[in-house]
Every structure is written in C-alpha cells, then in structure tokens.
Image (spheres, one colour):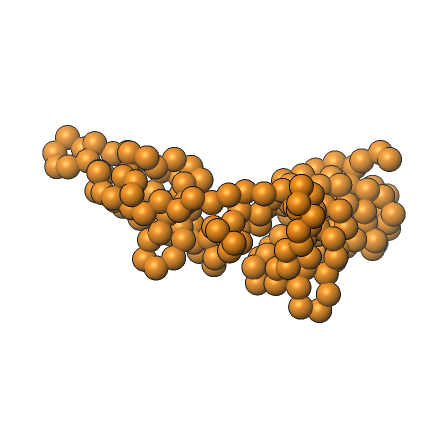
Length: 187
C-alpha cells in the first residue's frame, strides 16, 4: 500500500476497479481544514482522463509495472507481433490493446510496453518518428491562403498537415503525441 505522499507523475495504482496513472498532481494545504491532493489521472485501459481529489495520507494500492523495449515485427488481420530482443519471446497484441500506437507501427520499430505481470497495460511509441510520405497533392507556388499547409498520407496511413513545399516520397519527422509535422528529414 502507498499513500498520497508517494504520488508522482507516472505512478500507477488500482482505483475504482481499474488501473489509473497519475498525469499531474498538486498537494494543497488550505489555511482552514485538512490537506488534500488534487490529481489528474488517466485510465490505463481506456485512456479516459478525470480529475480526482484524495485526502492527505489516504492509502492506495500501488501497481508495479515493468517496462520492456520490444521490436515490432509484423501484423495480421487480428494481432500485431512484437519481439523481446533479449529473450526472443514474441508478444501478440490486438488493436484494442495498442490504442493510438497502431497508427505509427512500422517494421523494426522499437516500442516500450508496460506490463503488469504478463498483462500489457500500456504501449508507448517514440515521441518523434521519421516517416515517408506516400500521397500528397503538389503544392502550388504562392498558394498560402489556406495557411500554407496541405494533408499528406504517411506510410502507415496516418494523415498529417504538412507545409506546401513537401512532396511525395520525402521523409518527414512527426510528433506522434500531437500528430503533427516537425521538419523535413534529409536522407
């Protein structure tokens, strides 16, 4: 058991019948009344984010999660397969277990998977990835009335907004959390 004094960003605990992760927290000591901890917590399974308040010293059940780096191998109609480079064990995950990470999976991509025992609870892809553009309209010189951006389809099928000077076949760096263009990568 852990108390509210053990709270930190990334702390995972059992609450209301599910696993929750602390996104941010603040210890509050009002001038009148008992202290409390105001938190923003995220459900590890569903991604739901809620604000929750805990009394100071309240006990919660901490969950020990082990993070492993695995390499994405391939996917079929039902599962995506990852390999542990240390033990060569394969792990199969469904699209529901992967969540938004499925949009950025390319062969040999290293991802971090957090496990609660043998149960995968969270999949993290790198925050910045280099991806190839497979489809985009050619930019028209001088056309900046739309803010200077256009949609581009990446090799995994994700569509992001890119500047007008970006063409098909080019490689760009994207932010996977915000799904946005960062820069063009020279190969």
